[in-house]
Each structure stands twice: as structure tokens, then as C-alpha cells.
Image 1 (cartoon, helix red, strand yellow):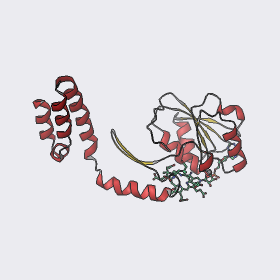
Image 2 (cartoon, rainbow, N blue to C red; image 1 turned 60 degrees about the vertical axis):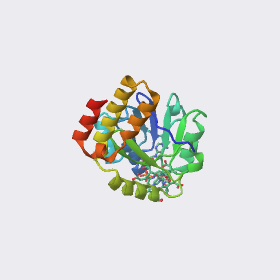
Image 3 (cartoon, rainbow, N blue to C red; image 1 turned 90 degrees about the vertical axis):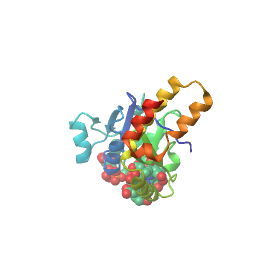
Length: 198
Ligand SMILES: C[C@@]1(CC(=O)O)C2=NC(=C\c3[nH]c(c(CCC(=O)O)c3CC(=O)O)Cc3[nH]c(c(CC(=O)O)c3CCC(=O)O)/C=C3\N/C(=C\2)[C@@H](CCC(=O)O)[C@]3(C)CC(=O)O)/[C@H]1CCC(=O)O
Ligand SMILES: NC(=O)c1ccc[n+]([C@@H]2O[C@H](COP(=O)([O-])OP(=O)(O)OC[C@H]3O[C@@H](n4cnc5c(N)ncnc54)[C@H](O)[C@@H]3O)[C@@H](O)[C@H]2O)c1
């Protein structure tokens, strides 16, 4: 399996089923700019809140095979294996499909991940142990503290400046390497000094 970052802006995302697992997957997808549609006769309170807030569209009925048309990514999360298999069959080979009770029928898995602004660290055990993925995420959570968010913003600004102003390839690489010094992660004044010296 090949890990990537997906841009879901304006993409259609279909979640079939409105139970606990569907809620969990929807929560992870919020804030990505996707058009999320949930097809399900029932919804959890959490999903209902997303609908009321306008973050998710609810189609209040059972799944129909035409629901997967023009959808970029599909999460299949009913509690009925037969329905889940039907949803999977109605997808074409080029759609991203995650069947929550059948990793073998999925062409992608969701990952445990932590986020510090532009820094994203995602963990997968390819279904061997979602709990281990969660535990590793919690361990990393302590190591990569809040300071990384601002640090990543600094790295972006500094790297853009270096790319713009430094033509010598060797010097450019040296400066990019220097950005990784611990003092620059920890100390705002060191960062400002570094930026003005580029
Ligand atoms: C990473 C995370 C992201 C997320 O939230 O989706 C995620 N599962 C999480 C939690 C979790 N899932 C389950 C438990 C209960 C303990 C247990 O069963 O072990 C817990 C723990 C909890 O909830 O605390 C049950 C479970 N999960 C799957 C099955 C089906 C099967 O194995 O056949 C069953 C059994 C259902 C049953 O038996 O009824 C399948 C998948 N779950 C995956 C992802 C994919 C592989 C990820 C990987 O291995 O790295 C994969 C293959 C497909 C997918 O769903 O994408 C999230 C991490 C939490 C976090 O980030 O904090
Ligand atoms: N991948 C994971 O992370 C993970 C974790 C735990 C459980 N699971 C599996 O996920 C599945 C769902 O679990 P749950 O706790 O969300 O179940 P649930 O009972 O809370 O919810 C099931 C939902 O499916 C809807 N549904 C049923 N038939 C439907 C149909 N024909 N069309 C549309 N919607 C329909 C129901 O109305 C309900 O909203 C189970 O099979 C469970 O084994 C997966």
C-alpha cells in the first residue's frame, strides 16, 4: 500500500451508513473542503449535528446503486455486510473505496495521524492493529509538541526566501540544512535573526 496526501477540496465524498463508525470517519473528513453526503435511514447525534451545521448533507434513505455516481471517495460503513458488498460492487475501479468491515475490499485505509499545522504524521499498520496505530500516535503526540506548528511556518517562509535569493546550489543546501537546528525550533528571536541574515 502506497501512502499519499489527498486534496479533497470540492471533491464529492459519500458515506454509506450513519452509525458510530460512519461518525468517526466523517469527523476525520470535516474541514477538508469536501462535499460530504451521508446516505442512511438513521444518524447518530454527532452526524445529525454536522447536518444541522451544514457540514454534511444527509440523504435519509437506504443506499441505491446510483449513489456512487460521480463520487471521488466512498466510505462504506453500514452494519450490513450484504449492503456493504453491494456498495463496493457499484463503484467503478477508479474510485477510492474504504469498506470498514472488510479491509480486503478496500483500496485505501484511513490512518491514525497527528497534525501540527503543516506537519502531519500518519501511521498505518495496514489493519494489523488499529490500536497500535492509535498508541503510536499518542506517543508521538508528546514528542512533537505544539512548538512545531509555528516552526513549520518559519521553515516555509525561510525556505521560500532561500530559494528566491540564493543561487549557489551548495550554499542553498547548507542553509536548508541549518534550518533544522533545534535552537531555531525553540527560539523565536533566533528565527528572526536567521531570516534577516539570509
Ligand atoms: C487508524 C484508524 C483511523 C480511523 O479512525 O479510521 C483506524 N481504525 C481506528 C481505530 C479502531 N478501529 C477498530 C478499533 C477497535 C479495536 C480493534 O478492533 O482492533 C479501533 C480502536 C479505537 O476505536 O479506539 C476496529 C476495526 N478497524 C478495522 C476493522 C475491520 C477489520 O479489521 O476487519 C475493525 C474491527 C471491527 C469489528 O471487529 O467489528 C479496520 C480498519 N481500521 C483502520 C483505521 C484501517 C487500518 C488502520 C491501521 O491498521 O493502521 C482499517 C483496515 C480500515 C479503515 O477503517 O480505514 C483509527 C485509529 C484511532 C486513532 O487515530 O485515534
Ligand atoms: N474500520 C473501523 O474503524 C471499524 C471500527 C469498529 C467497527 N467497524 C465495523 O463497522 C460496521 C458499522 O459499525 P457501527 O458501529 O457504525 O454500526 P451501527 O449499527 O452504529 O450503524 C450502522 C448504520 O448503517 C445504517 N444502514 C443500515 N442499512 C443501511 C442501508 N441499506 N443503507 C444505508 N445505511 C444503512 C444504519 O441506519 C446505521 O446508521 C460494523 O460492521 C463494524 O464491524 C469498523
